[in-house]
Length: 64
Image 1 (cartoon, rainbow, N blue to C red):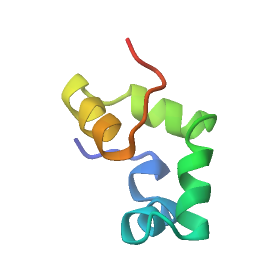
Image 2: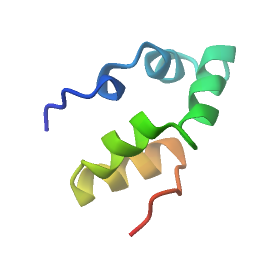
Image 3: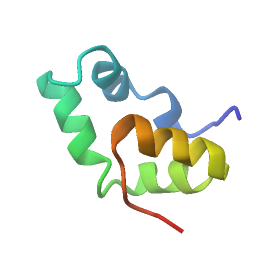
Image 4: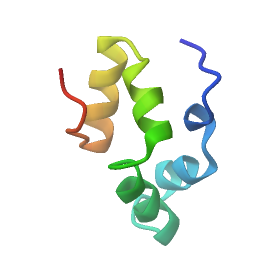
């Protein structure tokens, strides 16, 4: 699914992908716990895509 939401191509998210333990990577991971943009992006995804992100980022919020 191609998304027009900025979270799909977030530069901070790219930092996390490259180096999860970097300062920016850790900031991004912490930030998604309350970011309204991430919530909108995440909840717009299909159930399969949501599960992939949950597994990838150990993300437990916004469960059905």
